[in-house]
Length: 337
Image (tube, rainbow, N blue to C red; front, top):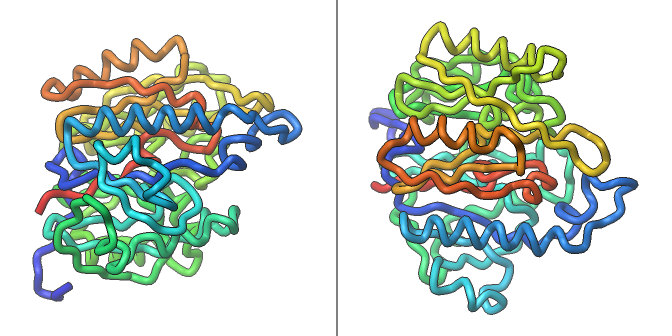
């Protein structure tokens, strides 16, 4: 990356070259986590795979889909939809271990430490995306990619940009990942590598989020001047003070639309980190997570009003969330150059 080059990280609603996903195969992530006494639900992985097929189908009419798999020969029934990229990987959360792409095609590859080394088996995902990996795809579209590595730990779900120089994040996550760094240090990194001129710091993310508070469950840009913010209506809910604070902070700079929260409980009676803010904006569609919750239809109407030029496609994420994330966590956009 030339030091004199104008750099910019585009917003998610800008045109994509492709969307990246990784095929779910791990029976531990989706089979025994958040279950009573850790006893596996042997059918959940198959249901999560069905969810991924729905996502792939919904995206295939909108843009190129690039799918990371362990063995391209195992999935002939998917080939008609996607480009296949074979690599050894652990988990499906491409949002967090893939690069942040700039509008000139540069891939800013952050270091990934599996959420503060909480999940050592996932550490291999730090090396998934590399120049050699990109060249080995079958039928994929990746464009010309320049790689830059800033040398700090950061997940893609921890930042949200409006394409015009503003970035949202949480203190909870970023100050934990690189404890040697201050907020000013981060702001300098974001300016240098992403072209960011303003960072808005929210205090924390939603409860029970193993990522330590990713922004993509709290607040999302829908255009450069408007944000949707997850909103808890029950004052006795532990998310109420968190999201009220986020709303107040964001309202100082943007028009803010409240997005009511779902209230999913895992089978082990723990509150799931489910949020409607974890939607994905593709070229022609918006993939919207739903959770078999009474607020599903209400929130779909709110999102339809924000994206009049795109079809809103609901995707049931009540199984996917057992792995700790939803649609935005499982997708990574590569902008068109």
